[in-house]
Every structure is written in structure tokens, then in C-alpha cells.
Length: 135
Image 1 (cartoon, rainbow, N blue to C red):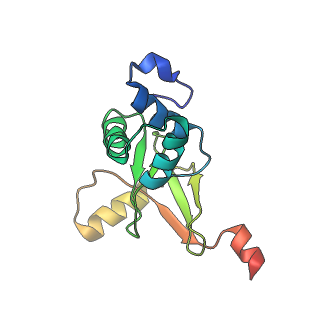
Image 2 (image 1 turned 45 degrees about the vertical axis):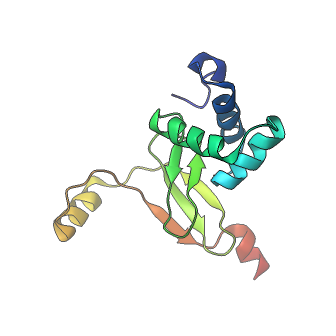
Image 3 (image 1 turned 120 degrees about the horizontal axis):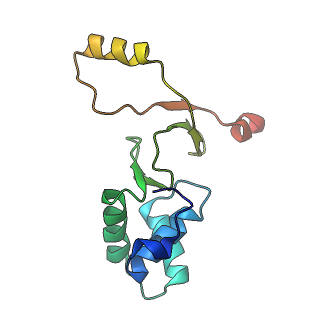
């Protein structure tokens, strides 16, 4: 599924449509709490449990991606195609990066770790331009 796919064409419940709409219209990678707040503004009767279950369903159906950086709450991404991220260690900003990792880098990591690769996620951690400007 692409970001441009019409939500109504997916045959989702109203609640799942709202959750997907909130994620698709955000320029950020939202936490479940942020998705809940945005969903509540559009559909006041929606519960947190419904949002949480909708996130799980939408992820399993391939409509959204879940990102775990190991430093707190999961984030949800409207972009489901393979891509990487840059994470600001000061403000928490997350930026999508479109790049191809050299196959030899993955092969070297496999040799050194003796792991068989299932997936590769690259996260660049550093300080974003806005935070650098504040120093």
C-alpha cells in the first residue's frame, strides 16, 4: 500500500479509518498517545484501547509501520517501504532517510555477528540542525 491509497478503498471500520488518517496526515512519527489525541479530535467517542488495537491491525495489514528505537514508546510511520531514520538525541525529532545500504556492509555484519539477517534498520543518531543552532 502506498501513502496515496484512498482510505475508503481499504474497507476499514470508521475507527481504523480515523487512526490511519491521523498517521497519514502527520509529518511526524507519532506515538500511540499522539495518535489517540489526534483520533479523539476527529472522533470524540474513540477509546485508547480502540486506537491501540487499530494500530496493531493496521501494522499487521501493512498499512503503517511501527518503529522501535529502544528508548521509549514505539512510533508509527505512514511510510511502509524500506527506509531508514535519523534521530535527534536532543529533541527526539525523527527524519526519514532514503538510501541503499551497501550489501558488503550487511555481509560484514553477518560475518562478525554470525547472525542470519531477517531485516536491516539503520538509525543515525545525532543532533538535528535546529538543535545545533541552539548551541
